Image: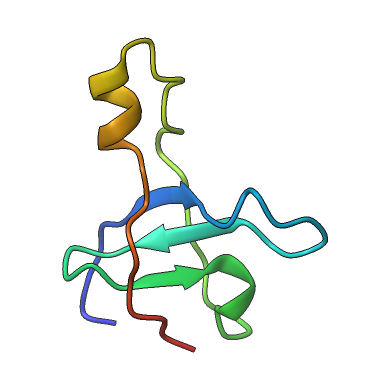
Length: 69
């Protein structure tokens, strides 16, 4: 990856027994944290706030994306 910044996301929260924590990069790619290579690290600077309005909830909705493994 050529990015130094990503947004922390929880994806597929309606599915049980799978990992949900992911990073969304500026190009729209979403990578599960469990897909990071050994030795790679991610530092979370801020977790997303709980939405308080319908507009905020829509903004935090994860759309279909391209997976990168």
